[in-house]
Length: 275
Length: 304
Image (tube, rainbow over all chains, first blue to last red; front, side, top):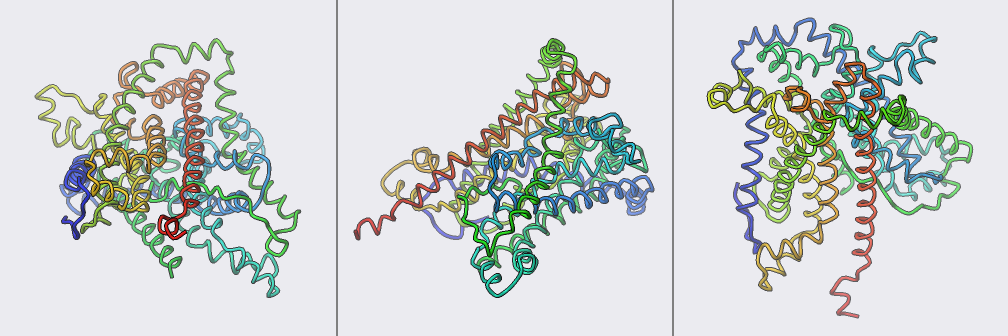
């Protein structure tokens, strides 16, 4: 990396040196082990490991629950952001600060609290059980935990966009005879759509890697409620490093693809704003 | 994980909502009620439950669980790990932000993406990569065993995994802030004869202090609360390689629910402190921003 223009400011070499050395040793070298160790496997071994029925079942749980949770978060995240930006009610600032709770609360605490809440004798579970709905130790429980974890991503992505929305545009729509619902669907929604999609992707990306909040509520039954991160830990504990790494590589590739998609989405959104 | 994980909530002043662009009061009340009920169910109820369960066996049992030697040693280890990971990432974050925000060079976007990378990695995989490096069967496992150095299932591994997980927080917060502020003020200081360190301390630091504090708070919260990554590399030995979140898990799995929730309530208080500090910093930053925009630009001051 070379500087492309001169500057009078000092410290370029030192700061870039620290940054690159640190990134290489702390981040890139450790991550490279996943790729290097998977390369030791033959293609058939790799494919056999990552498409084993138990592994496939864990993909279904992880990706299925993450998708549903991110979808729920998209709907309610938009609603919460809308209410926080547009309406005034007592305690609004407190509620606004509370939205970040899932970022601040250690995941293990969220995990045991949600499990107890939704267990058959829990505060919420006891009302759902008679209806035949079991949450804790089922697929639904996994989704509930992921909804908790993912909510702030959607709210915090949509909120600034709603805040910047020009009231004049809505006024124009109204003065041209649009009903409020029409204005929302045709004017507001298309404007916040990129932010909503980004929020969805962020919540989904966080959910597929989540461990702490899910592991308590899921019950961890192989083929039924076992998530991919737990399967990786199980393989590690059995000293099946090759198996753990192969599954981890699949998850890493999905995560990196999502990171790329999110960056492209944000880049496109910025260009739209600047245009 | 990624990119805008911690965008600040908007704090603009209430806007007059005209009839044409607002919903009817009934719709407004319904939407607000639905949103608040949803938040109460997902966020508030778990919090209330933590304290309810923690105190379910009385205040004495609560205090006993929190003061038990294993809980205290877990708290000490949590503080130690955060005490190493946060300063290390502070140095990294400031260095990264300085070279990225104040200089132009090729590969800058790649560097920003690489800094973000740990946000995209599952905590479990973040722990696993250090097992692959330093575990018994890992790359350096044999050498470490010969020299009797224990990293995995010990404190060094937990520090490494936590440092990895929390590395983007401060850098992410500072890079956009320092990019926005440009280089003019620092250049003026240098031209007037200030040294590099002096310029950073007297010019840059006052401008970025709220952003820096914000990053530190978030970095610390994650370092103290991390569970998945630490769980993979910890030996789970009580009194030795147990952090507070891991202690919560052990107690819970032993059906010592009240004790487990008692320790969990300490972590919940930590989350409250984090949120309160974070909100305070946001208000300060908002005020600082408002003051700066109210300042008349120097050129106009001269013209007037």
